[in-house]
Image (cartoon, one colour):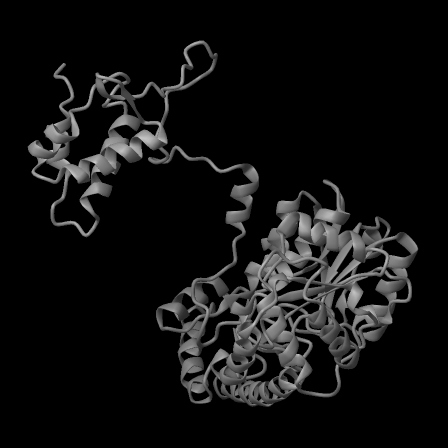
Length: 494
């Protein structure tokens, strides 16, 4: 076998026209040759002067590459002898069951069973704007200038504590502002010390599961439910029991109630995705059941700020006299999703453990952003923005409802969830293929989510579409729905 020639190898692969500096190219090429065992241990490299002459480059370029490889342990300098490839190949000959190294490619990479389940149930979409993407607010209407002015003020002279790791469950003025807002707007009974600031609903739910669940614990979830919650629960090792819904919300059967769960995860203010609001009697039943059996209720107060008909019911947490409710909220819908800030309101006895758990697991931070948000709330900008957006979204909801009525008779489709939130559910006739409708609509430039994907068991799924209207300009709603109506009719089964 012909001996490996360093100069020939480098002449072949060195790109004199590349934007990458030649010294970095040389370093990478030599390192890869060593890792690929083309340059074996104890191989003597040409002197820097000789190699530079053969390659037609400066000696300093070669010296840089050699010195970097020496510093990283790939090469070693031997006095009066030169520069040699270091012996860094691991000796695995004596170990049983050792296979030859393989590259991660060609279908040889295998995820864990948990990873495979997570990807099989993935619901995150690449398109996050336009007709009719659900759950996305109109970020173009956010008061950027006010936010920018507040942020500049915060950054003008931030304290050292704002630039290091966070502690204590979040920026204290933000927790105080949140406590005041939640008491007034949602009847949440809490103090600032019961609030932990998180990155959103996903992190809040994950923290609850990590601190309060053990593998095999039973969790009730609404069926259908938010795909992100279902994915987190499945990845945490708990046993998921899907509970059906009726017009009043979560509706467990007597047989299900005979086996109390560890957790009950609900969206009572605006069920996702069907949109119903849990009745007062059903709320009271859940609270009494949780008290009697020691269950934890995880309340996701989804879209509660945007109610268009009547005043919203108080939160479950505000009705809870036995401290069995963990209340989650987020600013993704009221402000903008990229903010990545949410909050978790805890029973007083749990708060210290959750503060410690938050810092131990996630190392919180973003104090300057939290400080800006605290000022945004305290100065009244948050409430004013929510009021403006409620009017805007209410008008868009009416336009979408009118568009639906202009294309379909009430006997053809059913609409639910039109009183609250940023989306509605459009039920399709039995036997419709909502996933095919969604694919055809996307080809026409309209993004919708098939309702059947939100059900835990495909056999129980009802066909339909989840339509978001918040991030669709008024003038685009009617023409976009006309395209969607075409996709629905093209997939109708007679």
